[in-house]
Amino acid sequence: MFRTPNTLSRNLHTQIAERIGTSIIRGEIAPGEPLPSEMRICDMLAVSRTAVREAIRILTGKGLVESRAKSGTRVRAPELWHYFDPDVLRWQLSGTDIDTYLAKLFALRMALEPSAAALAAGAANAEAKSRLRAAWEAMASAESSEAYVTADIAFHVTIYTATGNEFFWSVAQMFEVALRRSFTIAAPGEHRPRSLAEHRAVMEAISSGDAAVAREATAVLMQHSADDIVRILGHSPFAGAPKTLPALQIDP
Image 1: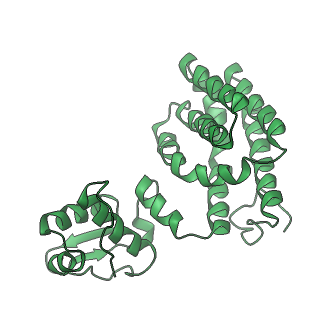
Image 2: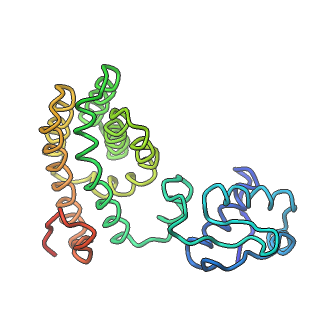
């Protein structure tokens, strides 16, 4: 069920948590089913009981498992997992096909990001506006796709943090993991000048405090980003998810 960790670059208990967590998210251990006993895991992975216990505590903190005195440690229902946790998100993405991943990610962003931009327009302080401009300038001057993607992620993270609303901050915290795969797909191509202009429109609307324009500019940016994904992939990953992405209106 679990494989022996093949690297010591991280703490051993972190590696164990990743092995078990990945197995849970892939469905190898179904919700409601118990994990093997601590001693069994020790034997399977050739590790100490202390390391296993610490790994279980990590997984408990991420919402994947719960331990009870008489029933042992069992996998919790998926709706109780902490999906914004960077590790949980990374484990999920590693086993998710690209179309499903993109459809879910864009559903989240279309639901939240225009509103986040509107809130940022009303709440952003001088420091946040400066960070947003710095991120845009880094996009404009990027000489590689990797540099462009890193700056693009920083731009969108700043929108969420600039809202001053800590509930939006949780979304921003997971973007380093969630957006990189999507942005890397879209980074190449001839659309970059248009995308830069659209990002600038969002930046200027937020900087000027115009919530309505910030909301609309972000919606346009999101729609065109989805169009770029479709064009680059050669098919629409959103075509099979009309209920998930009602606002995208993308032809299959």
